[in-house]
Amino acid sequence: MRVSYGKTWGVQLATWRHFLVGVAVTDMKRRGNPNWGKMGPVMPAVPTQFEDEVRRLKLRPDEYVDSRKLRQWAYRYRNSNYVPEALLKAWGLDVYSLRDVWSET
Image 1: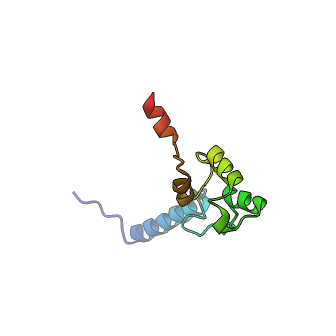
Image 2: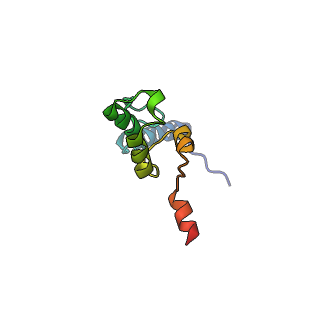
Image 3: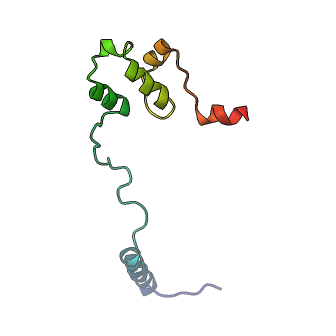
């Protein structure tokens, strides 16, 4: 047995659906990060600790290897600050990470 709702049923259903969707969209809280996919602010380039130390010691690049103070600084901070790999090799210094230290125990 088939029930007939008449011609107005489709119109009423469409109106009711539009009302529900309109309310649901406008009353819902927006979720998620509104800045997703957008570029973040441009960060200024800041000098590394190594560059600060070189500036403090007033050294030129050709003086790096011969500088005793820079070598002492690099020895002290080689595991925590950036030191150019070429200088570490020239001075024979090894860098240890926490992974190396933990794997020995």
